[in-house]
Length: 219
Image 1 (tube, rainbow, N blue to C red):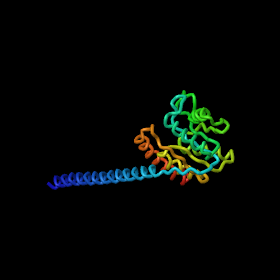
Image 2 (image 1 turned 45 degrees about the vertical axis):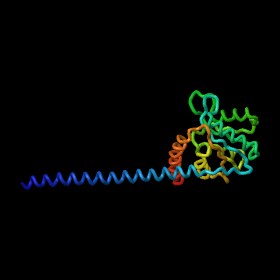
Image 3 (image 1 turned 30 degrees about the vertical axis):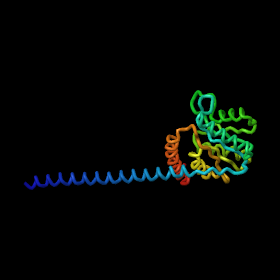
């Protein structure tokens, strides 16, 4: 009889322990979901808070790359190029760095080469355009462009990109030690912004983690 009672007690204890574990797991899941929602809201707010603040004069304008469509810049990249041309014509800078690697194997041009071709067709002397052909991320865009700036003895820059990309671009430039970095931002009328801003929340999250690793000397 005692053995039967002990067996029942073990079953009850096991069921109670399982319920307790499930309750704790549910609480942990709810906390993670809440933290994710709060972080996503914060990241979205940071993205939306980007402000265009180009310097009146800078040594160089840096156009951050975006997709090529075969031989031609995509509509989104053309928006960045047209905005850069307006800043160039306004006299804010006289030299360009165009930065971006090859989108897909088999494409005839890197993003940088496609941007150069577009600018030359718009009347910019090819000698005023410096190419950075390797970058595959915003961090690399600005890291490799910084190397060109150092080689040329340039100190100041205006970073040209879309508004949803401005916060991360400025933070990357600051982390790399750019001297008084500024951004000139354009809004898009051709990109699906819900998609791009959602992706930027993820990209900003990754950048935030990378920045912590960089600060710790682990990246």
